[in-house]
Length: 183
Image (cartoon, rainbow, N blue to C red):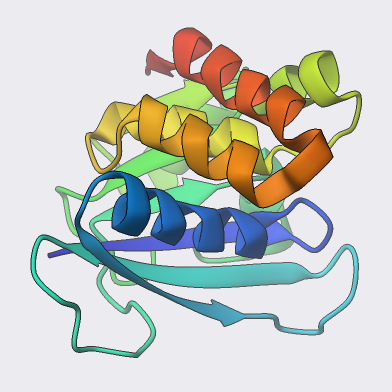
């Protein structure tokens, strides 16, 4: 069982990304997943969270993730907003972050003790491929480096989920996957 927590800002598509991850894992990898969103203030610009549990056997839990194996941060400034993305993390928790700033990445490493960090400028990937600053598909591409999901499953789920906008979003996921680096 793998427990994942997404941290984003309203309007970035973090909750949508969590749902797409569940589709990718369930329909395109033959595994099981459950997504539980938490919206906070429920407005654009406010912090939002999503909790995902993935397993090779049916997931019988329907709850928040309190001890994540993977943390995905959609906005590098979450730490500056006072959001504790390290809550419940262990020394083995992996961070996937939307950032090209080594300084910001080091802030997370120092504040929360993340030893494994995957970083990608998902905002750039989104703007380049879909023309909008909505990094959800790109962050799913970056998440593939953790081994939780394969890039082809993400691309298929993204294309199916977004209809006419699916192809550019699939390209954003692939672009981010190709440009993600271990920090």
